[in-house]
Structure formats: structure tokens, C-alpha cells
Length: 238
Image (cartoon, rainbow, N blue to C red):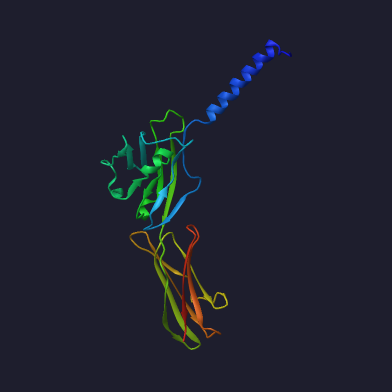
């Protein structure tokens, strides 16, 4: 029977131990969050994802959700098998919850209801009782606001009808454009007028004078590229 030299067996043993250590190290429990920003509109209910990898139970762990603003805010605390929000920041009261049935699968995500513009920011998901090096992750939340544009007839000129489009309650700052039935932009009577109110929301309006077309249909479109939202309204000019 063929035998291996002692030195070969020793080298194989070292290699096996090394591979085992690498494999064990790679399976260390870590707190994992999303790669992308979470986008929402004011009034939405959203989920801030956070989980343990590999998926071990978090039912008996301490889970801290905090908002990383100029000053750290306590958003949600789970400990000793229950929510413990006595020191929760006032603006989050009654709006946060965790998925208790999913804790056994390592899901420690946070649900935040009726989001507002002031909820925008970074959130930290921390499990301080973990012995691993990666005990936390951060989730970026961005909250925008949109509304439906309103078109009205604002008068007439010798050669056409003056239309006004207005839309308020937007964030971030939106853009506005007019389109005729062929999808062409008719020349506006000037650049869009924009105003920002005390709550940080934008109102935008623009006038356009139109002549008759085949259908007399015109569209006002308001869009915000950062949150990838668009609203539009059509009008038929008699």
C-alpha cells in the first residue's frame, strides 16, 4: 500500500487547518443593509432593510435603530424579547415597528409609517451584543413629495389661448414642461416660476399661449429626476 511521507502529511494538515480557518472566518455573523438608498414619498409606509448574515435568530438580541442627524436620535429599541421605546424620539412615536415573526430568521428590518420630509437621513441598525466585527450598518432614506398639476385657461390673445399650469407640494425642486398632442414642446411664455414655502415644499407654474391643433389637446408635465417621479395633466381647449 502506498504511503505518504511524514512531511507531506504535515503540509496537508497545515493546508486543511488554513482552509478551515478561512471558511469559518467567512461565515462570521454580520449585520447587512441595502446597497442602494431607500426612496419614498411623503405619507408612504416604508421598510429600512437590515438583517443578519448568515440568517441566525435575533429574538434574544439587542437591536438599536438610531437616526444619525446632527444629534443621534433613538428611533426604535428591541431588547429582552420586546420593543422598548420609552426613550424614543417624539416624532417617531407610533410610527415604528419590527417584524417579530421574522426575527428568528435574522430579519431586524424596521418599518416606518407615514414618512415625512424630516425623516430624510441616515439610519443605523446596530446589534451591540454581537461578538463579530461588523455589528452595524447604515441605511440612507430620502423622502420626496409630489402633487398633481392643475391646468386652467388664463385668458386669450389675438392668436391663441393662454393656459396656466400650477403644481405645489413638490420636493426636491421639480421641472415643468408643456406638450401638444404630437409630443412637441410649444414655446412657453417664459421660464417656470418657482416658489419654496416655509415647509420647504416647491410650487411651480408656467404659462403658454397655444393655437388650435388637430386635437386641441395639451399636456402639462411636472417631473423630478432625483426621485424619478412624474405627474401630468391634460386639457382640451375648446
